[in-house]
Length: 222
Image 1 (tube, one colour):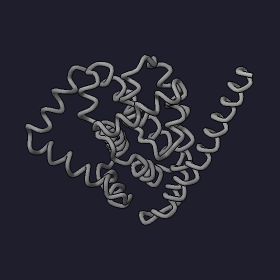
Image 2 (cartoon, helix red, strand yellow):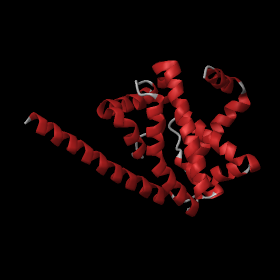
Image 3 (spheres, one colour):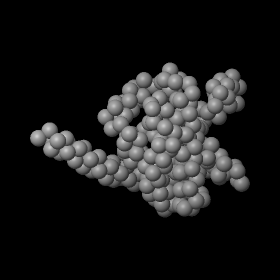
Image 4 (cartoon, one colour):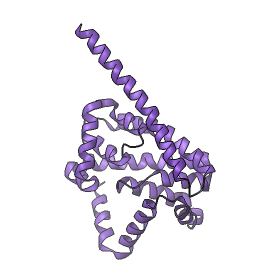
């Protein structure tokens, strides 16, 4: 883990690596799967490894969109193997974010995520406690990477974090992969539709949990 800051410094020292970071960031921020698919395919037999590294990269470099890579993986490798690749690489990225936060603390995390994003996630953890991680993974509008970083700043164990992340991330990965296997690069409307569906379902579950807890507390008070 101690090598991570040295690697990041090296990226900014050597022009070629810096150029790759900028190019990759723009590629993922385009919200278009076609150039991402072309880029991954260009590596031939190394395509899966490159996709894995792209997912880990976007995990560290919040807030780049992960679902673009998930869609691309499904289109290239088929939805089953694409889902496996996307899920495992996202888990690796989440674990890395958690480790960075654990090892280097809040100052380093703030520089990577920004004060606003980290503050918002802090509030989420304060509100939902131990359930925050799995709830955040189910809500598509809650950023993936700041949650991973923030979890590393709490007392939540890595095992609990990893299990909650895996369970929460799996449904979205499967659905995005299945959709990505059928859709082309111009599917923004469908993507937004998926996000809305996920948000509605997760919000329903969340509200049900909140009201159940309130009624329980009210019953205890009475």
